[in-house]
Image (cartoon, rainbow, N blue to C red):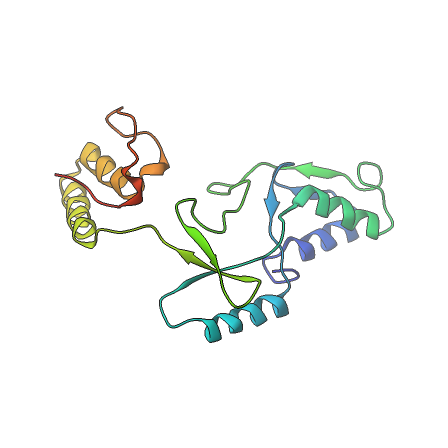
Length: 180
């Protein structure tokens, strides 16, 4: 959210006012931006559009490179990036991603009556299979069976990486379950 407590904008303003450097995690990092009033308005629209249980995705436009944002804020302060105020790249923090994903690639997005609110259609879930897999996860944790736990987790999130046993993934990722 632009200007919120977690936004980089107040941080960049403070860093620019102090003479720099402006710290950016990575030159490639991108984020979506939306104002608080715009986000609130769209969230209120989902209340009108929804029946309960839907997953809505807000159209936030195109992502912005944080390095570009830093450069523009330096320019707007009357300074020159790299001359008057340096931009320092400090590296990604643990768990931080370069690019945000607004929805999963296996989900489809449908239009709604509001052009900036989309409805995400989740992939199919075999609930009996999911419950069985969760039991396998619990058993693997109790017995500290890392291989079995990795296999169970892979069956829940097949696109996360290669199968733990080295086999190539199948296209069964549309349905979540673990075969015994």
